[in-house]
Image 1 (cartoon, helix red, strand yellow):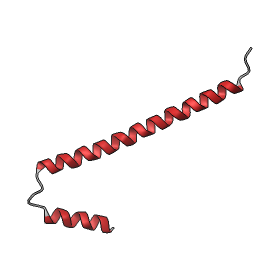
Image 2 (tube, one colour; image 1 turned 90 degrees about the horizontal axis):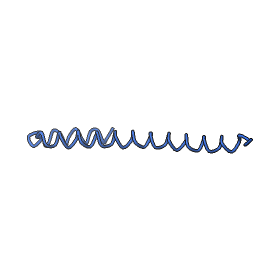
Image 3 (cartoon, helix red, strand yellow; image 1 turned 60 degrees about the vertical axis):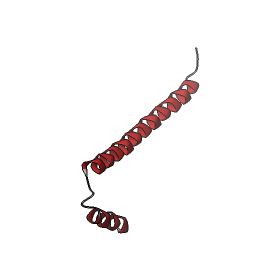
Amino acid sequence: MNIFNFYFTLLIRYKFRFTSRTLYYIIFLCTFFLCSYFFLLLFHSFVRCYFFLTTQRKKIPHI
């Protein structure tokens, strides 16, 4: 809760300096973190699928 309060006071203090460029920076940071999280999840799912397939392949007996 203190972090939100801190950001709120910063926004009030620099209200006149709050231009579109800072908004672009905030949007860019948010999209960057979202994309990185998405790619991390995708990579994690691929790794799990790969390990699952390799373990299943070892369990299936070859003819």
